[in-house]
Image (cartoon, rainbow, N blue to C red; front, top):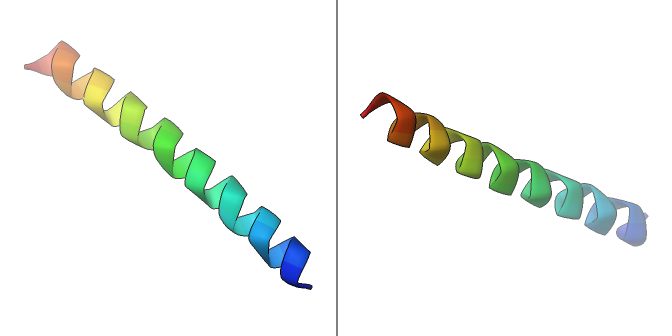
Length: 31
């Protein structure tokens, strides 16, 4: 259970990092 939850949060964190980099890239393009 704990391992599963930890893996889930690692997945969420990597997704957040990806969306952050995508967002900043989009802002750089549109500015």
